[in-house]
Image 1 (cartoon, helix red, strand yellow):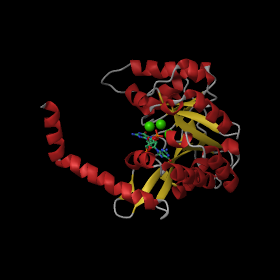
Image 2 (cartoon, helix red, strand yellow):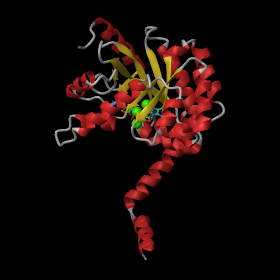
Image 3 (cartoon, protein in one colour):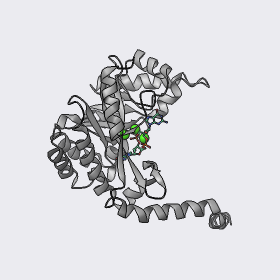
Image 4 (cartoon, rainbow, N blue to C red):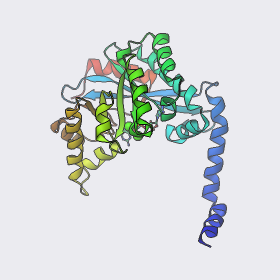
Length: 281
Ligand code: C2E
Ligand code: CA
Ligand code: CA
Ligand code: CA
């Protein structure tokens, strides 16, 4: 009876219906969006905490939908993964990010998110080579961000893909670190360059409602990274208090609204110019 009740409820839940229609609508538009050139990349800066130097940017995709306006990746990445579109979309992202980075000073890096579906696709190495060759970007300027679950899904296969990607000279960052289920012994065997500490830990750090343990957790992640000779980037840094705490406990890099929100390619270029003239404290 309970199950039936649930079904009845779901059937008549107008909110659910709206969401389902919304999803179906997006899915049917998504297929054409790539051909129509509706995707755009925004860039969010990453800085070195000790020196205040600008290190580079993470590329974050948005969908400029003709009717719905700018659609968040949170709304369409999982759809793109389910439909397989993530493979050509991801290839476009990598190519475009490399092209855009060619307009920046040569010491700045660009980081690109790699979905588990892309990572598991046989084309990924070719996609990478193509993006580097087509753009002319030096390989060490490109960083690939993958999540823990991507690595843990099939860690033997993942290790091989990682080695193949790294053999091209690119860097690899482990994204959203702390939210997945990384086994520490695996972590040691993966050839990684940095851990990106998930925003959820950072946002708890100066929450007056409690949690001094949040700082201890971030500190533990930083120590782990140091032991493994990995860089650390704190994600979602929004306040000066968070930045100062991160500096104090030895986090190397920060990314977040405190520094800047993601910007389109043109804004990114003026941001770089502004930073070089007058770097923030
Ligand atoms: P992510 O890789 O963890 O990216 C960081 C997200 O946090 C971005 O959201 C960014 O705008 C947001 N963020 C940055 N700083 C702050 C802050 O200080 N406070 C808060 N509240 N948020 C902050 P966005 O752009 O909506 O992207 C969401 C997710 O979509 C990304 O999370 C990533 O998983 C996925 N995504 C974005 N672009 C791509 C892409 O090109 N390929 C793939 N596969 N996934 C992507
Ligand atoms: Ca990321
Ligand atoms: Ca992240
Ligand atoms: Ca995330």
